[in-house]
Length: 318
Image 1 (cartoon, one colour):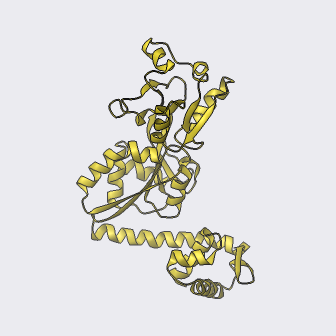
Image 2: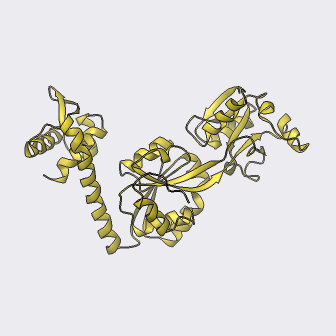
Image 3: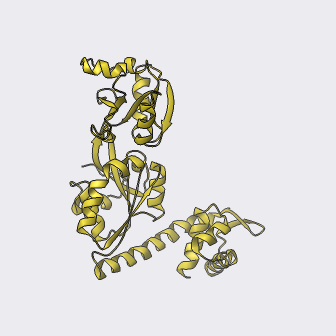
């Protein structure tokens, strides 16, 4: 038994049993992948995969039982490598952060700047995706830290820690009727907001669920003319006069967005929690803890380790 055999099994499942893709991921040949799997099956004395001819079509019952063990062995091997690297070179290595666009664009920059200044020997890699993709990158071991508002708390394989709460703002051009209402200090209501076409985030992004829930609770429908993954796109089309934007309050800057008026909407929509997640059971190098505390100062090493020791759930509330 060797790690290449274990990686072949794991990637076969991750890549939907497409051995051509598995071979590309593992930088080997398709016959080589097939051989590694067959040799492991022969050694274990069980068949791990269902087959149709030479194609893999799924896991057998023994394969489904063995897969978590394969994952754990590979995770332990990676943890061993990281532990050794941590002792050999505390401030040298790579830190991969997966985040949604909003987090990467508006929340992470100060922490990235400060961390880079204090850890010049650490290479930072930033991967962007949907909240679900952020979770999948963590679970696949392709990211050390994940940052998103939605989804992370729903994965048992992740430890998700609350970082900070934020609210939404409504943005409009300065000549818009809602901007005039704001200047007259009239309180914005959902009924008033529903009178205008809306531009906001796609479902699953940046607190969109709280936006939908607020209108539903009051029995109001709103006309959604455009949805997007990030606030920069939303602001662009609001400036074009296509509709009223609803974005994360952190995404608006008075100087940078001088062509837009922001109206506080915290009374309309429930607040949102940004969470930082790591893979359960993974070894965290010292500088990973440093970045976490740089991003969210309450998340000290002690707090993170306490959360990671919790077996019952994936969310640790502080």
